[in-house]
Length: 269
Image 1 (tube, rainbow, N blue to C red):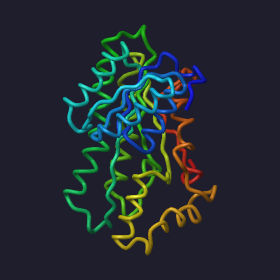
Image 2: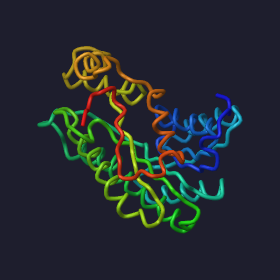
Image 3: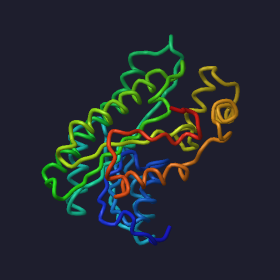
Image 4: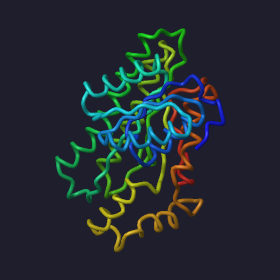
């Protein structure tokens, strides 16, 4: 991927969950648009590989080991971004996890794991990034916090209730965070993907077979595409990165508290 645009020049970004999937794709896209990116994930080697790809293409990237549920890790990742690039002005809370279980089978362990990563992890990311942005002063903004929601920020299915709850929480944090941080020249927005073919969904597909929701692997994506997606196809990271770029760019400066759906028409408001 060659550096050929300056849409995000001057943007210094921390991305969580950046070792693979959508996080990695967005990191490479941001860098190709001129941003400097810090890649955080519990999978440090994956982040280092993505960072190497970015640097080989002429971009600027660093990697950091990050467990989003640990405030000390998040603060260290924010500090790494500032130390590496001079400031942080975009925070992308992308890290997430899912483990489907039918409603009556959901355990406390399942609930706690998903809510801790997907909800608490986003809260901690927003707080630590915002604190750094506030220290930098309003005149150096506008700053942007971007949270990854889901179609399940707007609805729920019986086999992913804890995940749905966690993504409803992300929407609440977009709305509440926008109100809390506006006076600091910080906007808070997000985007909600639908069915995206990534490593996370490949595992989800296997899990849905194991709990009896579908009979064979691959059936979940095809079935959802046929029955619930107006465009009759599932998506790929390439379908998401443009909206993620818009939310990080000056084009979205007069926008806050919003969740943009990128789902092929699964959720129509």
